[in-house]
Image 1 (cartoon, rainbow, N blue to C red):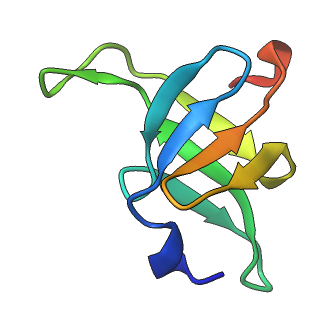
Image 2: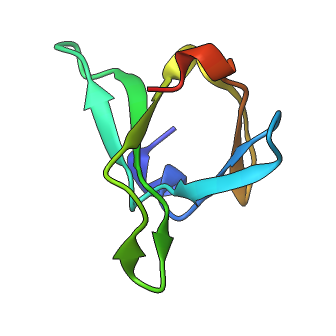
Length: 81
């Protein structure tokens, strides 16, 4: 799958039923061989202002499904950074 095919998809946490962001507004962590190892999702913005300075790191193995409009993740609460 190409990065252009991922761009614009909503990222949704299945456990919290919460929209975390849109790929394109997130950063990608890429290893030396060019594989994506994690999504780095910035803190939620409210009317354009950051609510807090934290970010969520989602390891690639926690991505459960990539659909046509969204990416479903399942990340344990104790692993949210």
